Length: 179
Image (cartoon, rainbow, N blue to C red; front, side):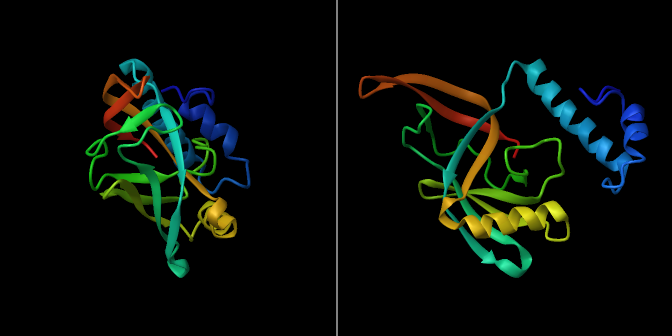
């Protein structure tokens, strides 16, 4: 089975078996294969993955890497000319926290659950502090403080277009969030 630019699963494992920084080449290649399949499904469906970002987070428990992050605001025109409507996010949807820059070539650094609170969309998340990537991601977040930005990757399942204040906007009605 193809693994995108990494070749077949078997080729990926063979190339990585001698790499000392990879703990389990088969597990890593399997994860890459899964990410490749997700991207292929997006391409095959005609959907495209998009990204948006917002600042604002709170550390709930530093010892356990737990955070609350605001990553979207509802009912406002954002910098992309979109308005995300209430209900666009699946309440309680589990999502992974990807490394900085949406790097799908690396392991996720945490996981969380999406929820809406008033006009904000919140990630109730936890970094994997038992992994190097999770520890580094959480440390960077703490050190950035108010400069930290949360962004999410998604595809649009349902949208509409309308005019508001003399400009065309896209109404995001239903999203599939990947990260």
